[in-house]
Image (cartoon, rainbow, N blue to C red; front, side, top):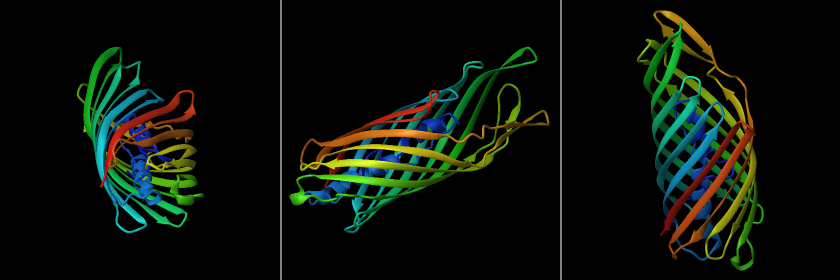
Amino acid sequence: MLSNPFGGSNNSFEAMIKKAMQYKYADNGEGIQTDALNALEATMLTDEKTNNDVYAQVIGGYYTGSGKSMVYGGNMGYDRFITDNVILGFYLGYAYAKSSASKENNQRVYSHNAQAGIYSRIIAGHNEIDISLNNNTAFINNTEKLQLAGMDFNQEKDTMNNTTNLSLSYGYAFGLHTNEHKGALIIKPTLGVSGGYSINRGYKEKGLAFEQKGSNAFSANASIGLELRKYFQDGGFFYIVPGADFELYNSLSAINYNLGGIEIVMPLEDKKYIYGSLFAGGEFKITSSLSGFGSIGAKVASADRQYYSGSLGVRLKF
């Protein structure tokens, strides 16, 4: 893979978990992109002549905020140098997410998520530009107990969400090469922006006949980070990335319901959060062409709004 599944501006698995709380799973793919890119770029710093890479990994994550969510799944992908300075790759993934959004009404949300993405890294001297585009489709089931006028109702709904994400990040890599390739230490400040467009299908609930209209929403985020990446002579590497993520904009301000011809508007929280983040991981060689890799990460905005994520996988270079 290019770099690390949770790398510098990686919102990848954290995004899945966060979206699970919104009844969908959306992974912007930046983390997958980062792991893959750094790994393939390692061949530039050693005597390896490979320029192709296939990989598979398992992922997991946990989120606490206005409830608790868990996500686990996996993905597989392929990337290669298409020129001396450009890496291009793609991946397919699946994740299962579940969340408990409220103790009072025993709300439970489950979703099956399918994702496809493409990514690229452009290397121009010390400049590195990462681009990723992915699409996630989530099939969602939501159950809850609702009390109204002293009566209990068991509500259930099935719906679907489709989210497309585009991200762009720029980094300047200091100290890219060392004498005789005895290893390289890269210090790379990064700046990234990302945008997502979501389409939420409308639905009619079982129980009380609530209907929710379909909606579209656009969101934008920004990130800064400082990637410290150490390559080793055998082709392995280690990285650690402290950083911060900023929620900038979300166009969805309310959810519209209909009950018996009566329109109900439920405003959504308009607060924007800033997250401190820390990601770390690495790759180790198993054979001359087979490597293992893993990573862990955390993002925290407050004591009750936190993300934790991890991955483990194998990679074959040829």
